[in-house]
Image (cartoon, rainbow, N blue to C red):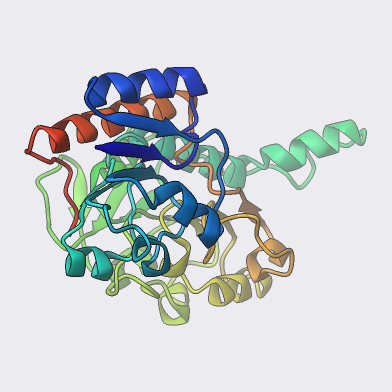
Length: 314
């Protein structure tokens, strides 16, 4: 079989190629590309003779796959897979696996980087001290005693809850399935939005969760609450969130995700909203996470070649 790794995966090229070749074994061909290209003609060129492809978070649609008659397996080197045309994969019997779990620690770390900056004004303090300023107007609250609301109690949400508890927070969660997690109270979404001082989103993007956090949900939040999104951009109504920030109906927000992948249009409402920290979809991308991801990719490839695919998505 021919295996095409369609882009770099955040570790040195030779290391990645060596890992994938070892996983594939001597009887299979491996091609690794050193650049990330997202245009349809290039993706077709790179994929059209492959039996298996590896990609992360760029769009991989019917227009590409229908030009790839040998394609049997897609390894999504990412947790979310909404950027892959799953309807076409089901139609053609193409097996798809993801790499859930590699970024759990990295995402949770950034959540608390966001929260602490929103509370303690670290970015602004850095600017002020260089302007010969003082702490006037920059004194913020502590995390201890705050109510931390977590939307989605999967691996990342659960880790965020544990860290929040270590800071001395009361933790609430909204999830489709309740779990027995010490100290984590499961409540309805409206209750979580209304009672939380910090709201952090950790659900996957599905038809049910797209637009889940709309103007009505945001209107339930406390005036001094902050909102964090490191999940998927379309889960949140960006304009509604920007309006709440600009009208001082909530105190702040931090977003790592948007409706599309970066680069983001400078006119995007959240890039022009008051007290909103924005990052270019980097929550998942720590040094350690990139190596964890490469290892999961290799395990997925080995399992598929052995006839027992793992980490399957529907």
